[in-house]
Length: 355
Image (cartoon, rainbow, N blue to C red; front, top):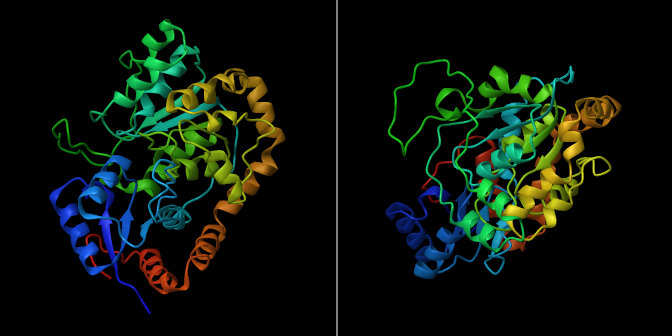
């Protein structure tokens, strides 16, 4: 028996359309496919108002440890599809280092503030970076609340909450885009998406760096999310450090990837708060982030391991992994979920639709 599925984009959860679709799905007893990264508060609010579905699917491998009581099937479906698109381009092959590290930050990330302020705090200078869009207003309450209870010195707390001084640095758009207002901004999807961006600047930034500070879209505590930034780090042949996420290195290892734990100290991933995870990701790896000769020598020594990661990323690993996850579910769900996954893989998924 095949169960019906309703696809709801996560960014609609707090709006009238998202609520309408959710209410309809609950009334129809449908599985809900929550597409893209969601805010746990938005999910909680809509569940409290309309109830929980029999099963919620999320394609961002977005484990949120504060909502584990909800019936959620997580799988890295978006990442699988995005990597398929990225397979049309070339991996970095030269791996000649010019910088200790790079970072690529998103317009909506709360941890981008922490990342930039910590780079400044530790006086790190040997890096390259890019922004994906002009700064949108972000709720800083999570950082403010956490910092207020931190054991860090007052001077550091003040620094972490100070305005960002680092100038925005964008990959040039191929077209002249009109100016939008401050709440709606242009980003990579407006001028070619992640494949175009990789081919027009990011390959150079990542391939010439020893380490990638991977700032995924984390705005809440104890959450895992993997996006194109993690894929870029592997494609660029770099050592990965995930800044902000919880258990991210561990989950990437479970997928079969080398996280270079003999070189990178990933203990930061187990810290209790977002601020601590960001702070110790840099604090515990200062030598490789600041000593270029040391960093570049390590990269040369590990070239074969870095290339092996690239090859694994471009393999069928994620497809096989996602299929295996579905096979672990109760039989009543498997047909429906395989159907929606195949629709997504074929780029035929229609948002705000019932299947």
